[in-house]
Image 1 (cartoon, rainbow over the protein chains, first blue to last red):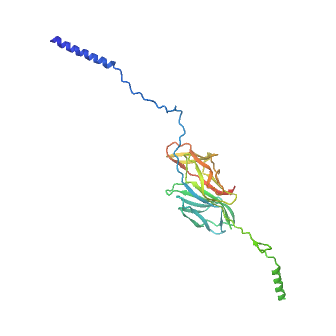
Image 2 (cartoon, each protein chain N blue to C red; image 1 turned 30 degrees about the horizontal axis):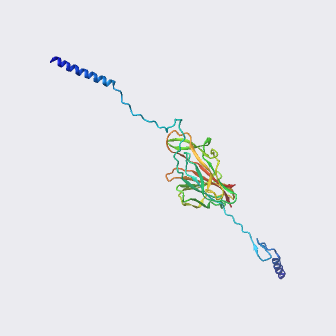
Image 3 (tube, each protein chain N blue to C red; image 1 turned 30 degrees about the vertical axis):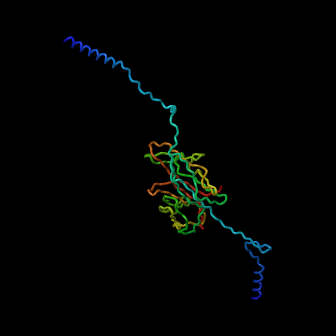
Length: 155
Length: 151
């Protein structure tokens, strides 16, 4: 009886040993093979890409060649306006040479000035002048500006 | 004496040449020249801002009714030294280079010219950012000078 028990234990030990050997000698399962993309190119550094394009809004600036003022008076007739197609505010300022002789407030689209009051009267003559259009968004953000250059005749 | 003077005046008035600004032909027809001047009218569209992403901007006009020989030139100012345009945004300061298809733009350079009836100038204007250190949108402003000239 005792021998029989020893035999059973021995058989179990042998089976365990065989199982361990089988476990160590087992071949690993082959992993699935991934196919690299044949469309990929050799990397040669960054290329220039198309960038996101901005939609550029525009401001209409009416121009003129000359303006006639009356000599020795400050009140003058003009046609300065912010075209209705604009959606910005414009501050107009009139410059004769380097001197500013009139400045508006923030002029809304489709509004303008027919009569202005100069800071000083001008003598007869012709002058190089410019009307500076300073443009702003409603929130005060400055936009591009434009100088309309013209000849001012004072008679 | 008075009668004599009156007759003399009447004769002088009859004989004196009349200076009408017209030519009278033998068949009774007359022509005269009426001179009138209509100023050139134009309206140029400028970009609201300079966006330095390489987008090309073509100057356009809504009205370009110019007298014969007149052109409208658009030049530019607002660059710092080295023809660089200061740009703000992206939580930092950067500069942009503004170019036309032909040259890098500097102060005073003519960047567009309109002839009578033209609604789009031939030159495109574009800006590229040079030294932005932070991500974000950058924009800058210029002053365009618009002047009627002779072509």
